[in-house]
Every structure is written in C-alpha cells, then in structure tokens.
Image (spheres, rainbow, N blue to C red):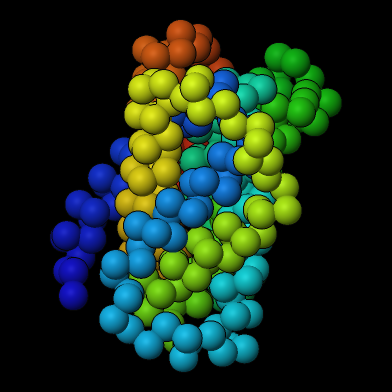
Length: 287
C-alpha cells in the first residue's frame, strides 16, 4: 500500500509526463491519423498494464455493476483522446494544456458539488475566478465573446469537460474494483471502440523515424501507461478534488516545452489566465 507522501511523488511524476505529452502529441500528429493514434496508444497501454493483473481472476470482475463504470469511462477516454489529438494538431499545444489542465479541476469540483450538494462562499469565488481565467486563456476579452466558439477552443473545452467527468467516474468505480484491473479494462474498452475507425493501411512505416517513436512512446507509455494509470490509481485514495488539483503543475511545464520544441508563442493572456485558474484551484481546495 502506497502512503500519502509516496502518492504525492507519484502524482508529481505523472503530471510531468502529462505536461510534455501535449508537445509529444503535436509531433506524432504529423505521422498518423487521430484514429490510428488512439488505437495504438490504448493498445500499448493495455499491454503495459497486463503484467500487473495477469495473476488475478480478471473475468470474475466483469459484472454489470462494474461494467456500468468501465464502459462509460472507456467511451469518454475515446472522446477525450480524439479531441486531444485534434486540438493539438489544429491549435497550440501549450495553450491547450493550460486551458484543459486549469479548467479540469474546476469542472471536477462543480460535478462533485452537485453530487454532495455542499459549497461555500470561498469555493464560489474560486469557481468564478477559474471561469475568468479560462476566458483570458481563450482570449475572449480581446477577440469577443463569440471567440469561445472558435473551433480550437471547443476542442480543448471538450477535453476539460470529459476529463472532469472521468475523474468522478474513476473515483466511484474503484470502490468495488481493483485499480489496475479497472485501468486495464478501460484501456481494452477504448481500444475496441477505436477499431471501426482505424486504417492500418494508411500507416507508412518507412516514414516512422526516431522522432516519431520517441514522442509516441512518451505520449503512450509515459503519459498514459504511467501518467494516466497513476492518476486513476491515486484518485480514490486522495479524493477526486485533491487528485485533480495536482494538475495545477502541468500548465507551465507544458507551455515551456511547447515554446522550446514547437516554437509556440508565450502570450500574456495565457499566462494571466493560467495564474488566475491556479489561484482558483488553490481556493477551491484550501481547507
């Protein structure tokens, strides 16, 4: 059993793997379609998790009660990853990382607020501040309110909402099912869901160079097999709100790597919005 101190270290490493994944995703998009990337990412993820569960009675846990969590989680994983790859392809990876990772904890809190029906003035202020931070990141104050419906913003907003929903689902799911088994079946489920959309013949293996393999291993084995699995494992132990708050460490690492490796601009509105959203997360989670 991992204690809280080790859980915090695990989560910090997981967040670092997530931060660089936005740059990795932008790069691998140059080689494969979104659908092939999702399929390969989750196939590798499932294979990498299997050694942790192969001695367990895995079929026994496939009950109706467990499937009602595994199936929705698998579907949401697919939706999130589709818009993750689309958003990083058409938009700025750094901006997407800031928007998604700062809005996600706030969305998670709002969902839990409706479930637990508990909220105070400080938390309302935090949610409001986070919303304003999101508007800064999307550059609404300069571009106008209709800019929120800019396709690049929509991709990342959907990512934030779906990940918030999945954070809550994984929290409740693991009360009845082993964490690694839950992760494995969600990854298998998403792999199966992606099958009708892939085109293996489209893959030009000659063009898959070291640059692709290095970045794909980081976005699959690094960010998903290690990062996402660690996040799912830690969520029921830390609680969904505290677990999602760890995401605050992602934005500026992601901005830095995107600026260095992709030459993306560091715009003032993204930095201001990111700081406001991080303050919002602190207020929401402060005892």
